[in-house]
Length: 380
View 1 (cartoon, one colour):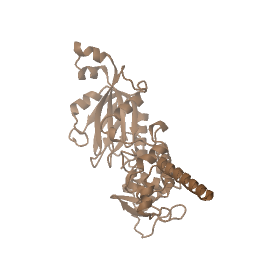
View 2 (cartoon, helix red, strand yellow; view 1 turned 30 degrees about the vertical axis):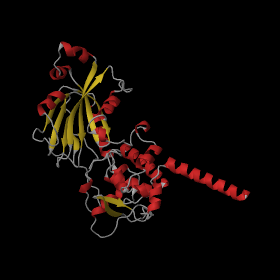
View 3 (tube, one colour; view 1 turned 180 degrees about the vertical axis):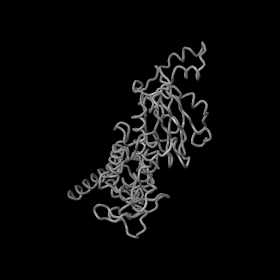
View 4 (cartoon, one colour; view 1 turned 90 degrees about the vertical axis):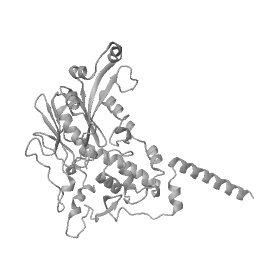
């Protein structure tokens, strides 16, 4: 499944090739009501046609194209009456948002534009698969075609039909109190996060500092979690955009076993986990998921070796053997010599569940009691 880096790559491709252009044709696969849930295909086509593409946004595994509603489309969609005129006049702009999610096998293709995107599941004999070349247009399994006024052609493909594409409309009101109402991309993203499906998404840790948790907030959020840490990282309501391989990389860099329960982690391990999430998300987005640009110390480059049939374990650049284990139904890649599963008592586990501030407060109180006790003993 495409994760944070691949989604960032798709968004960059769309922004580079579409921003500022006008949609002359939008041709959805009218037979596929699964990929287009609750879609009115006629409305979808008419709503996007002649719209100008303003910007491309992303959050976690979702990405979107924001277009300005043309006057012709606006007149078609809104029937103005004397009663509604005052209300409609207060609306500065209307935006159509084409919201997309790749599912397991979705991807964006732009005619004549190459990409470094590869399907990881296609790796064989320890070799990274080659980027897929499009030999005919539109490509097989195309779910929509988008054609702009200058002839740019885009196709969204999905063989397994697990992707989701929705059309949403956002009104930009003069009376809106949001601080970012003059920042259209920020305004649109803020509004999207208030409605389904993005309302259920957690923070995207590749974003600016003011959009993610602080270290303290992170410790408080995970303090009471009693699940394997690998499962925690895959929870999109907590870590939007983190998928299977990213979770493995985060755990490898944190030196945490994927089966270790969150409530069993020490404070130091939790802080390492937080810092690794920030670093992996940042680098993954900066490189747009291009494995050739990943640091050589990363575990990711050894995942290609999973299907080697020689019986020998792949090794990291430092010579450590790589192994695989299933956690929560997902295959996890890890290094047994570096990611050691701790065995702790129930009491230790319960103590480690405490949020950091409470633990520090208890520690201070305990130290004060001990000091008073020693002083009383000395006096007597």
